[in-house]
Amino acid sequence: MTYTESIQFLYDLRFFGAKFGLENTLRLAELAGRPQDRLRFIHVAGTNGKGSTCALLESMYRAAGWRVGLYTSPHLVAFGERIQANRRPISEADVVRLVDELQPFFQTFPAGHHPTFFEAVTVMALKYFAEQACDLVIWETGLGGRLDATNIVTPLASVITNIQFDHQRWLGESLAAIAAEKAGIIKPGVPCITATDESEALAVLQATARQHRSPLTLVTPAHTQQPPLDTVRLPLLGGHQRLNAAVALATVETLQAQLPVNERALREGLSTVRWPGRMQLLERAAGQCVLLDGAHNSSGAASLRAALAEYYPGTRPTFILGILRDKDWDLMCEILAPLAGRIVCVPIHSERSASPDQLRAACLRAHPAGRVETRDSLAEALAATESEPFVVIAGSLYLIGEAMEQLQVTVNANGDEKKLNEWMPPASWTATVAMPTVAVTAG
Image (cartoon, rainbow, N blue to C red; front, side, top):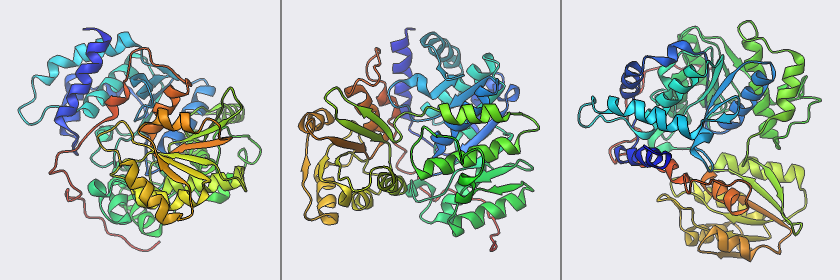
């Protein structure tokens, strides 16, 4: 099997959709020799900031000399971004080998229970990290937490960055319901760290932590002013990223006894962290500034708005917007449109893309006097705005990945691997999945 054939095999697994439940992943991991038993994890869930918090944790532990695995999703351009050891993406040869090793196991699953793409890749990652003898794996959930494929591990710490509205169709229509799914990564006796500030959601986390006798650390904006964050220059821009850094620091402090990190490594890790596509500023040859930000839901859009006010007060940039239709695109346009001098709405290369005409109408409702137009592709939008001094590209990580290729920030010689991010849940998969009963009390 070639690398191209391996990627196609993984892509074809989307035929089996995506599903809640741990049974398939547990069985596949068992057949693969339970690699999770040879690893230590920090499990990270949350509505926004999961990837950034994972990157911050990875950077600090690696600076301290630990060998660190990093598992995140989606990838921006290349599949290997999802599985990294010491920030080196998994090699093509290892992808081919792991797919080849797992393929025979798939034949043992009964009809109707074939492993999905995410289940298969999750076990591939476990095998790879065990082979790489990682001291620690920073382990990001895919969707939710309780029944996410990543939840087959027992971590050293559980991190829940925050809880906002997103994926309501599958996680529930209230913050309490969404919190119950995220809280599913809290394990008995395992410490939990969170920056959740919504009282309804926090009450669920507190109740779950009490139920499991898990120490709960609450990180607040005040922590962003404490050492070393009060003096370190963080490459990730925005107040929301400083809060993510505070969550990562609180996690490191919680685990100092098991995984010591000295002050030098803390500072080095924070000051050198890399996480592309999140408030990433580029300067093109003609002097144009382009800001890439994967603000993919209403909370992310609000964070982008706050960051623009902090770093670029008084500017009215040109926006290129592309949003998935299963997001709250109307509210996202309401948040972002009034900031823009010009807005160009584009489709995303995804079956789930909102139409540019829908986005244009929403932007005009929010900003009736605005200059709002549509283009048939991101390439056309970039050509139409090349004379604009400041362009913000936002709305979806899928769009950011495409922009990184169009702007030649990164090149994938293997063709379009972004399609691997595509998934469609079965029509029957809704938020009515039975949830555990948790007694919630104030405080």
